[in-house]
Image (cartoon, rainbow, N blue to C red):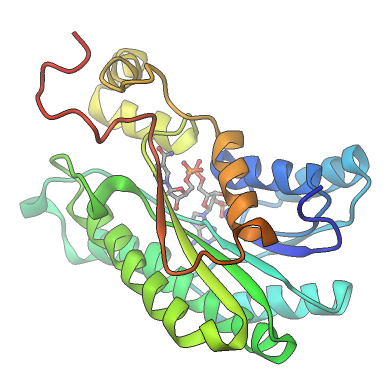
Length: 263
Ligand code: NAP
């Protein structure tokens, strides 16, 4: 169990990738602070605690609110006395053409995706500095960092910003024994991917997902548990000499050089 006796705080743990990460971390022996706005996340915490014989708590947390982030860290410290791992995963994506993206839509992405990661990192880091160790895993994307499709300007900008934040934090906190790395997934089969498919073709979202799978060299979307496996590696001591990197996990979707891929 690569995370035994570690305590991990995971944002966006109510569904999708965050829920998958929580499951893998529990299987690997970590105790969990699961954060999201949905109260149903408590059920996930209770189920994982029982299934894997770990401790898990749910803390209601809107990552756009600094006080919520501080409260999540405080509750975690009260319960466990330490936080070894932060997975900053909470994120949103709403497609919209650039010229029609108003400031509210832009700020919606920037506030959750960039400021949310900023807020939870700022709340967690003082404790990590004090204990002189920690691993932070930031959920970026291939979108923005490597690729982009029409309608993704706000999302792509926010996800690319997280690469900068990853490097800056990795550099600033390396001497404190804290590592910071980013994960850049391609399409992962989650409620967000479903919503993107619906936004692309409301009458046939499954055909959109099938098209994405067909254009991916490994011919499918990733599962949340596969992202969880990578997050567990980056969070664990197995990756002790890795910091400031971004790891792409995309089934080869960014490999093709021409649009004839998939035929
Ligand atoms: P999802 O299924 O929509 O889940 C998003 C999670 O973020 C939920 O747990 C949601 O919880 C939480 N969240 C949203 N706004 C929040 C806020 N203001 N405060 C706290 N939590 C908030 O999305 P997903 O596909 O699992 O994506 C997770 C992360 O992976 C995101 O950062 C996304 O950008 C990234 N990603 C996804 C894909 C993909 O294909 N799915 C690819 C690359 C990167 P509540 O609503 O309960 O608060």
